[in-house]
Structure formats: C-alpha cells, structure tokens
Image 1 (cartoon, one colour):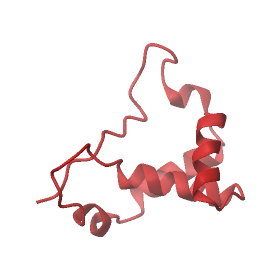
Image 2 (cartoon, one colour; image 1 turned 135 degrees about the vertical axis):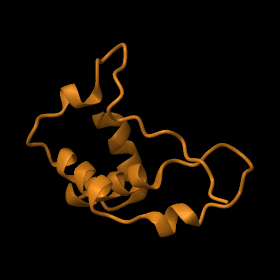
Image 3 (cartoon, rainbow, N blue to C red; image 1 turned 90 degrees about the horizontal axis):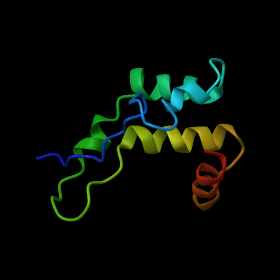
Length: 90
C-alpha cells in the first residue's frame, strides 16, 4: 500500500500572495522544470516505494525532484545549499 504524500499545492490560491505562480515570470526556468516533472517524468517507482504508515507524510517526490533539478540547473549541487537557497530565494 502506497503512502500518502504531503500535498503539493503549487497552483492553489493563498491569502498572501494570491498564488505562487503570480510571482514567477512566464519564461522562468522553474516553470519549465515543474512542467517537465508533472507531465513527462514517470516517478511511479519512487512513489510506490513508500510503504510505511508511521510518522508525518513525506514530501511529494515530484516536488523534491523539481527542487533538485532546479538546483542543479542553477549550479547548486549540494543538498544543504539547495535547501538554503529554496528558503532564501522563495
């Protein structure tokens, strides 16, 4: 039985800002990466490997893959630096 993931609500409107997408230019690299991960990559093998029902739900593999790809494409290769950049640049 597959584990449920934390929701990845990138398109959901929020109080402030109205939507994350409103702040990302149409030609930004992140839009290409999100489209690639959502529409082209088959991550079912990764998602299917989550079996435990204990603890907090894991992050969605699509989100984590998009984050890694964006970091690599931006010249950031260390996972801790990617995490720091995600917090500082968001």
